[in-house]
Image (cartoon, rainbow, N blue to C red; front, top):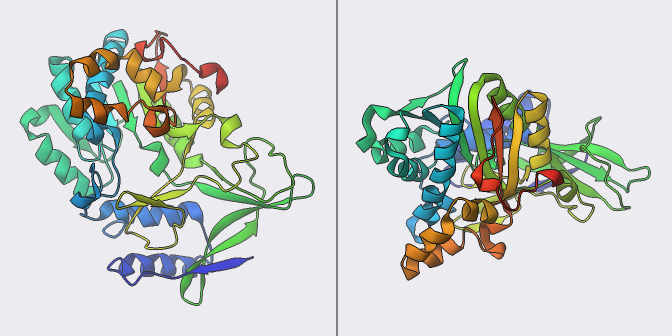
Amino acid sequence: MTTRPESLSSAPPMALQARIAEAITQAGGWIGFDRFMAMALYEPGLGYYARSSPKFGAMPQSGSDFVTAPELSPLFGRALAAQVAQALEATGTHEVWEFGAGSGALAQQLLEALGERVRRYVIVDLSGSLRARQQERLAPWGDRVQWVAALPARIEGVVLGNEVLDAMPVQLLARHGGQAGGVWHERGVALHGGAFAWADRPTALRPPVEIEGPHDYLTEIHPQAQAFVRTLADRLARGAVLLLDYGFGESEYYHPQRHMGTVMCHRGHAADSNPLADVGEKDVTAHVDFTGIALAAQEAGLQVLGYTTQAHFLYNCGLGPLLEQAGPAERAAAAKLVLEHEMGELFKVIALGAGPAWEPLGFARGDRSHRL
């Protein structure tokens, strides 16, 4: 085992850090990064998403840590609504299920755009503080909006997840030495002098593809995100799933040059790569392996209906005319959704279906399913 210490924060989330330290001790001195990430984000009453601090917002002056597409521009939800409307009609369903609804901005935009086509809008969110904000924002829709803590045995409708997969805990794999003779380790967290420290243990786990090169290599695997998709497949009797997030297909995700992994933290609209510092005070994410998501879906019985960049998807859904009708400030904000150096290329959209196949309009041009 190798260790590298990082100082513990003396900020208010000390209770969370003490809880994680206790878990490490009880586990014999080491926990996998997936467990560390889960506790840092979701530990009841203590984790980042269990705290009442602002998280979503366009500017750091609001006290927020990052912005997502619905907060950036309401045109995101209006364009996405065109795809949701088509999906509801194509599948003969009347419900929308949103996972990780954040501030409730996307739900509001969709409910305004879709009107009576949505008979029930169901939100699944692990954060009690965010749920309270959502309930306040969505109060005008009354009982049409509901919150659940667990999935029913059967779902019929359109399932949405905008920046949900990236917040699911990942396992870290580190190769010491090159492709020839290199040894793979699982990177977890230990304690060193009272501080959290990276600690590597030999493992039989491997990335899904062989990674060439003589260099050390750090990456992630995504069993929880893939399990989430399999659960959706098991419960979705009829309908569609739309997942929007930042990430890559397998060949790009596990490219030899991507040797530092993709784990990233966000706080005050600034990014850093050290999840062991300021634990509980910032978001922790990892990019999505969309090939793994697609394979998990297919193996569980869902169809891959399309995969493309967010820019192609939104333009296919009618963003162009919406931009033409918008004012200068609104156009400038919405442009970030599709510009290549902003969210347009890095963010991807994948559509999965249960039931008869149909062709989603969001993938009419620029479909990259063949590259997964």
